[in-house]
Length: 179
Image (cartoon, rainbow, N blue to C red):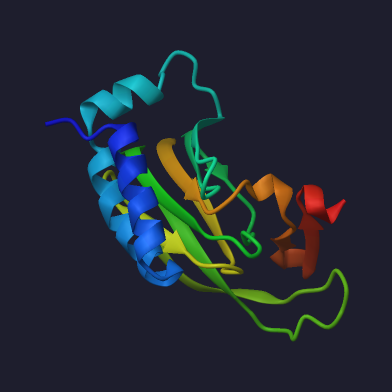
């Protein structure tokens, strides 16, 4: 039996309404695993020919969460960043993603300055997910390319977030609310 995007989003709405956000995030990550490997979902929302880097495939008008698909080219590595006051869940439908979580070493008192260190790195293979709460610093690496589903608690472009450059010990706020 196929697990459609519509079914998953209905389940997600119910979970987000019934559970505290930390529990809901874990439950959503677990339920997303079925969608990631569903042949109907994959053929509908990922297109090898188009390979659009990012596409929103669902926006919940009531609760605000978004579901996006990403076609990451081989070798793509994102900078360390957080999702501000929101949360995110990543899941892999094709290929794999190396995730690194970072720990901030400084107290955040100096503008544009941050010392961060890698805390742990792990691999997400097809059908695996990782959930991140607010302000968790992380980055993604796709050595061989990957098809990734990302669910966020809101439109991240509408809130301030942080992007880090560890080798220069820099941090910059970004997102529409940062302007």
